[in-house]
Image (cartoon, rainbow, N blue to C red; front, side):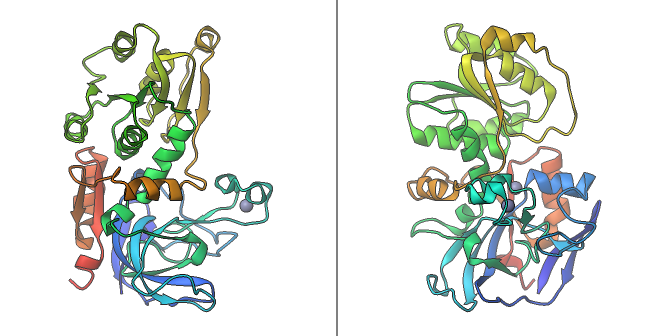
Length: 353
Ligand SMILES: [Zn+2]
Ligand SMILES: [Zn+2]
């Protein structure tokens, strides 16, 4: 079968590799769509980061590895003991295998497991292959009416959902989202679906602002041409945003978010900051802002799938698809240049080509 494998920095190859088969407790999927994630860009240009140069303690997997952790597929074969899924079921994959025995796993907070293996980085297989095999526990069956493209959005939307949940949004509030990439879009769509929440989005890319505008975002700020802190205060009678989601990953966005969050509000950092930076902690005393991080997701898939079934996450207008052959030139490169928001590889549609 065809698969895109990561061998090391700036080295991902479309290759022919053996088709996997499911062991007991596993599910074999024919992959339909796989989204390219910001972490795939980091891996490609700066890695190995998430993938392994020595065997992963849980799975023994090391590079080269099939990439792809945001994907949807249909069940083609069930391993022994899996009797609650059917051939043809549409599945969104939660690409995380945890140890199951550490303090955090036993407490149900598995996103803090210190030894997670990620499908598409450190497990056998990934979503950028015609077929892949996952544990039954990683497979979330999608309800009628949710499309395969939407299914491939569940993973990044779960990242956004976990982040907004940590901001404790309430009806009537104003929430600022700094960064209008896929995680920012996911935060906007989820906050809108929750209802009666005004969302202000700051995003420097004109292309991404245009996409957000088409999705219905009303309060869009260009941090290169307006003072974001003043603009947010102007829109909130001088109070600041009730909560802020920092999905940009650059120091100016964090500082703007901190300075424009209302006293006792929440500031949630969900972006991957690759560079350290300084900020004046005096501003924490002034505003008593609760700063926190948000790490992937933990039991968030059902809520996202539920919102999806109710129409919250249309891929129209912000998701584009490419063939497997285009992974680098039409996927990694334009995302790196921020010329697109979410690019998905149409794996099934181009599998045989
Ligand atoms: Zn991702
Ligand atoms: Zn664990």
